[in-house]
Length: 407
Image 1 (cartoon, rainbow, N blue to C red):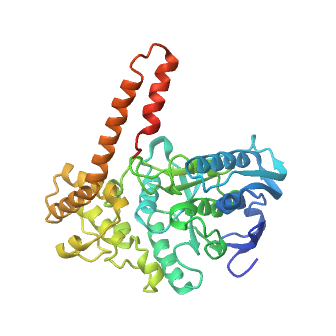
Image 2 (cartoon, rainbow, N blue to C red):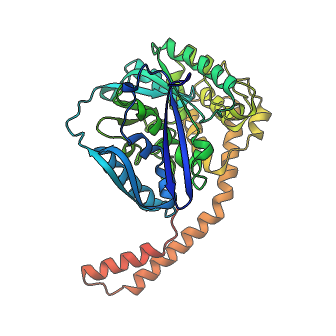
Image 3 (cartoon, rainbow, N blue to C red):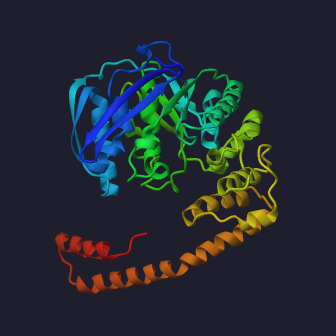
């Protein structure tokens, strides 16, 4: 035990060299409250192993259900991204967890952002129907969005989040310190790939105390990319029988989540969504002017509410905001919500014009794609005009399908 908690280490040896990862788990009273299984490390280091691929020997005990799910996780990522190599795991010992008891108690990773706040409010107010979990404690990770060398900034964010959670009746907050972002894979990006696997891996160190982890989803079903680290297909594969993973409500957009959070006064006052302020050393408050701050402000404005933790946006600032092209569908869903709820604020036509501008940039590529696909379809109809068997029908379908330009 250290002054910050129980320290655990793992050594990863491959052809790329040797890495030693250190994790310090806070909020525990003794070693029995932290799992001795290797399950957390398999999750945490999954992308590091996929960077190399091949056979991996795990020196320790792994639960059978975790091994099975990690194989599924690897199969999924390899199938959608060929840079993720196939991994074969060979555990020194396998623990049969098929008869282990489960319960409804859950650990909530909490950053203070909109997704986490929505999940915290939803489950503590029993609004998730049969999916509702009993949130026993929260988790904050030092070394994720706030670097390890910014202790004062993290402490301020911790105090900030504790006030939010206490208002919901969640009084226990575990702090886990990790150096993963210092020594972890550089091939796969934290924001796009590894964040969910690392977060679930860290949370699962506490599996003797909590049998479930519930995290806020980042995007709704129609928007979330398949290659995003947090997605509705692979998230559950990071779990096991003794530590189930629940990603909360992929059916809701950020604006729909904001609509629920509008009922939580403390949540709106203390919402922390800004990444810019996490790295520039200005503290735990939102800068109010980066793309994500402006977008979150608009989420609440679409609900008819001005966020008290954000500055009032000028129309000029809204017009000058440049979201990345991949966020167009996110902004489109925001505007769809505003139009459906008869929001006529002056910022709405400004955003409408910006969306039309983005769509115009994609118009020519989409037109060329439609022309090409139509030409291929007509060619396939002519090439296989004498189709008479099922085999020939499939040949025609494959000819057309394999030559079209995908989205």
